[in-house]
Image 1 (tube, rainbow, N blue to C red):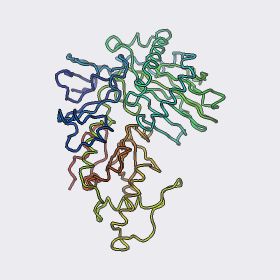
Image 2: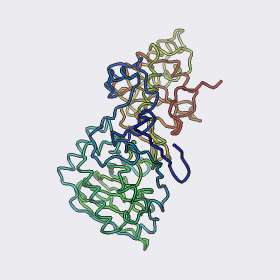
Image 3: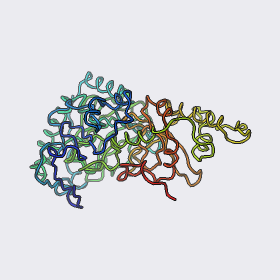
Image 4: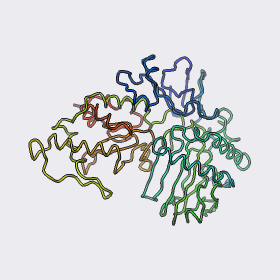
Length: 487
């Protein structure tokens, strides 16, 4: 693939080169298959089942492939531009606001917000909330902020194509309702130069927002940059379930206009129209927000900024699997007594965890020799680390780092990480993550239900080497464990 500032050039020979890194033509979820997939020599039945792989198929091909959990479950129109098989001609994809037909903030501000009453029934809302609650610990990326402007939680329902796979008919109906509103009130799609080749916009992000007392979005200049349409659907009853938290738009005359909509109602507007949410003064406000754009239908566990091609801040399943295989290439046991890693684990995990925080051990080290950190102390630290990876008392935020406002607590991919962070004041800090620790130094990774298996086979030499690697960055994550330790 050739990338230029203006276009993302694609020469897709999907039918003839199926092992080249590509979006699977069989599924609209956007998960990738990679060359040099995991070797079968270290695969185990329990992990094969966890990853959705078949040992028989792996052995037959000697090459492992990550199977999409939503294969053949998406609606036919859910595939993105890059997901279409047998594309043999060079395709130039639009990337500028002019090519995409996106309005400036001032132009979008002149267009009306359209209310869509009764878009969802109470039954549909309850079913959606129950399904999301059931899957949020497994397959849905989550993010929560307390400050600033919190408490405010976001669940990324498009993670791995979850929303489209779980509620295909509903997603189709919502997309049709938004397209009809555009056709009647704005004509954005009709006037978009790219519409003739790309057709109707697809889902960029689908987010379930939960706002509690004190939370809000008090920024009148806020807009959903890069998207064409934004749909908000109220899932709570104003005045009963919550107070305050009014949806407002900044109009051309400089005034903020409040738009009232009840449980089940939707409001749709051009994404570049400025909007905000006043402070919630009580209760809990829940809203489903879906943004549509001309680009790939995204499945990464955040609001993606990459319109075309792979997400630069998303570690593929194959990458995580390779990282895990390197991590479990040893014989378990304890790290070397004299190593930096054992010292960090003992000093940062040997102690008591409570709601008030971590109180480190202040007694005398058991050694041997007594008074110095030894195997007995390391055993205590490792036992505490295992407990924290199984059930974290404090979960650090990882995930994409486009800026400081988009970390994730849980990306819904089913892995738990131990990563190191360099702190100029506190030195190297070890933290537990349930999202890819972008910007950190990942040391260990395990399936959330396979922590014991990790420590039975952990290679402590590999983990120690990773302490000396550069932090994990979005575009450079393909083989984070295979760099050479700097001299």
